[in-house]
Length: 555
Image (cartoon, rainbow, N blue to C red; front, side, top):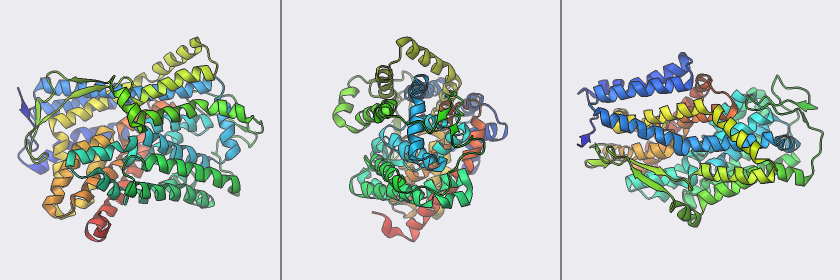
């Protein structure tokens, strides 16, 4: 029996909007104020959402249960799979003793924590986002920074904030391609529009990262490096987005930024070397990793080029495989032959979306995609297998490390399962559409709220792709109604979405898992929320000005 979504269940849009906010407000309260552990907050939030879906939105219990389970399965695969394999790969380098060489090689380029954050959190993280997405950059870059000796909390927070710049073009441009499919707008045109918004954030993010770490005075000390890093990234992002399409901006920008900064540091270093207050003297840096306490690092020890190459080889192999998995059509097509697309019996096409979310009543598909080979996590696992031979580990140590990783990540995985269940019940019940329609009712002021809608979508789903699938058509319809070019508003959904990534429960869970902060999700949420609100305010201002003042910027 089919069930059609209801978007104004209480007969008053303002009241329905407030009621639809209840699960989200509870989650904010549980993490930020009550300081509840993430998996408890997630489980209680999904319970509240299911009850509201059934009682207020009159969703059949069976459909509500199946939608929640569907989301939970999506949380395990592919998202949980990426987290497990990424942390596992990092732990292999620690167990084998090679991470000390990695630490030394980065320290030989720069011992300054500010510059290490730019290299790893911003530039390298952007490459991983562009090639794979789905939490990979936060997992890998967060673990790397923690292993280098960063305070785990800062490592997690910095990687979440740094991940703002590349998200719109993440996973080889899939968020923009999805928005194009949903709205019928050419993805290349959307890429051009986003390429005239996001680069402004990309210049700002590196500066903001260092300001958070070190304060104003210490930030100005490394301003030349910040400009090299941010401007090189933003310029390449702008040109690739406007002239080459949505697939390459992140990968190209990240590589150029990484190389430009590394070369620049060969000729320039700050007058003072910044370290955290609890670090030891220049001679020795002690790892503060909560995942593994690496042995003390002698910064004066010299390693050969071959030793450095061997230590970095797992991550070099990772880059190759992620590039193959994400960037080459032939490889992706071959791997996709082994993908299983399993309709969720009893849910697939049984829920119907209605106007004005869609142009006409449309069945809501529910197909579980089990891409056993094509998933980014599988490319990381293959990297871990190859690394076993490169690092000359025994199979026993390899398996023991994998089991240890699974044990450590059981609670983060539970949180991810619960928040994805929450996201899916929000979407299938129509609650998320109620929130979108509430914001869309603001009329000529809507360009201010268009990025907030994308921000909300990414908070709910953990993905800019999913946010675009959820709200892009609503952005288009609203633009047509208020006389603002729909291209701008659909693009703003992606641009605003990038600012919500750092507070997404999914991202928070990935970050705490990668840096050993399991149970500290509330602290990390409180740390990132203020930065997220600032960034979405900037995105809103940019969109509003482009709608009514700088409309010539719209392609």
